[in-house]
Length: 270
Image 1: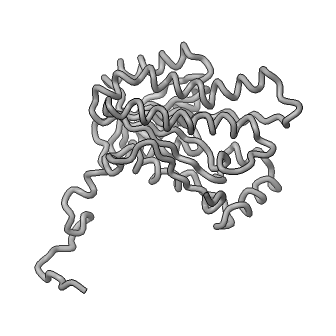
Image 2 (image 1 turned 30 degrees about the horizontal axis):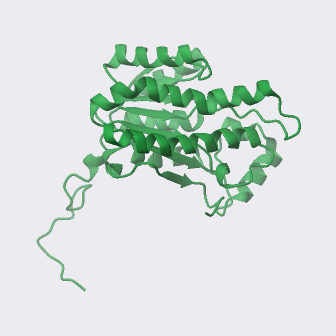
């Protein structure tokens, strides 16, 4: 057992390790958060802003985007609202363009927007399948591609694709959703490998059951079942996804790419 240096300081947040807190400092960086007006996306947007990032809140409903951005500004952050439907590639392009016009670049992309439309196997329609794929997989890919020159130029390019711990389960009953999220996870690994030489890191965050509108829409029985499915026997709060996301986009994760951070309360051991 080593001796303790009685002259060493333990004062302050770094506890004698200067620069540790700075690894999580996002001051001056520009972040796009899709699905950022509620649930996990809103919590992450607030967290990014609290760490100094300039945040673009993007989701389908303009009023909800504006409300979220206004709340962040009221808390002392810098945020702007850009409504976007991730199934519309023209809107995805406009999202990046408006972000660059407003803030001068893009350093962080958090692909959180999701479409949870479900149909049972045997009754899946081509239209429903396409709608889920467009929002959950195609949109995120083309958002990253459009933002890529800016992610590369800034020197701190980081992408977080929010998938689901459901990709590690059977996905029974939600096949379209888990298939799209599994595709996004595969894209995460491919993006990470191809973009690493360009200085852009790409990782995935896989939440388990979280107390969001999507989960509440399953009703009390569905919510209770989801809570029981986790080893911790409860739903997570959206705020519990903030620290994992912040880690992945920050310099604290400078040697992390192509990985999936599972924050599922013990839902899917793998």
